[in-house]
Image (cartoon, rainbow over all chains, first blue to last red; front, side):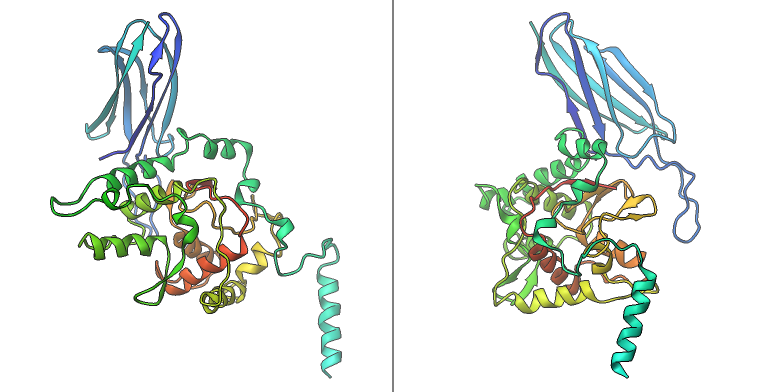
Length: 106
Length: 260
């Protein structure tokens, strides 16, 4: 189970630009490091991040090995209607983690 | 003979350290007391201060979930006894456990609760769950004064911790004191040496890319001077933790701190 922290405003005025933050606990092991006995540490990274606003994608990102562990993203979208924001991370093996937050737009 | 050799030592010291400007003694003066926070870049300070972006809160969240839920149907959760929360608990440890008369730290106290009141296995030191619970409990004292007042009962343990702090060790033959009481504020490669306070632990370190306990930090320092580190939870490390809590009394608890 990955730890996820989301920051989404609970309410917004229609048309407002809102700030969204998403943090996930993940080692983001680059695959370029070696352990104390010289053995290669295999790559283990998230490759894709997606944010959906009422099922519609509003922000996506491809992650590469140089992204730090426990990555945090801050991005913006325009508040259009009340509903739900879904944040989804997918790792190199296809495993996904997601969480949701609802927003009321007046 | 002795006077001659003392003079020799004095001359040698004077010759080696011609530019030592301060009259800094081996003891940290209370007026100089500074948290490791003061040695961070503004960006890192901002990361620690932001309750959302501070990655240490991932573990605080994890600890909160563990605190609220019971591990089995018949097992009480932490929250079912500690209904008022545990504000202030972090500044009462290390303390002497009355029944066993041993010095225990917050991690030890959490594990004792598990074995005595919840009939659960103790959590492994440095496991994600124990880090989470420790961070969650200590975070409830964030902003409160850090430190433990010396008492006659605690004195032997404080002395044991002080002895460890002041003893030179490892291939580099350095004591904790030489860096953290006498040389703080100066550069050590790309870093500034802090005063070595424990008020932000468990803390998130960039080097670890994870939250880590104070004992992990001790082990890093011991390894850094090429000394054999002690095991996690070792009683000497707990005594050192206690000595640091008397030495740094007056600072604020910052758990979860962010450090390099």
